[in-house]
Image 1 (cartoon, rainbow, N blue to C red):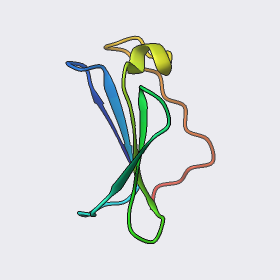
Image 2: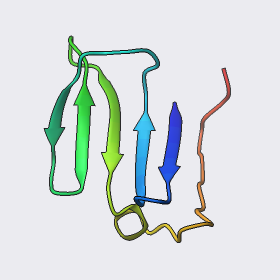
Image 3: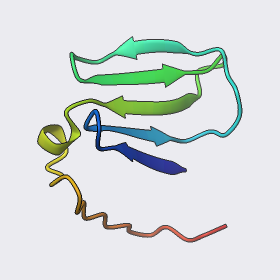
Image 4: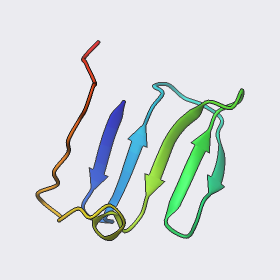
Length: 71
């Protein structure tokens, strides 16, 4: 999984699958979109206005990982 933050547009993208996919995008609301690959697998989730929606202070986000090991 990759987490990509773009401070210029204050957006975060959580990418779960590597590679190129023809995705269907489902908007959950104005700020959150889910990209789904054929077969129903989630490719990624985009969150706009991330500093507000995810309580991230631009320039110094805190991330806590639990029960995750590197492969």
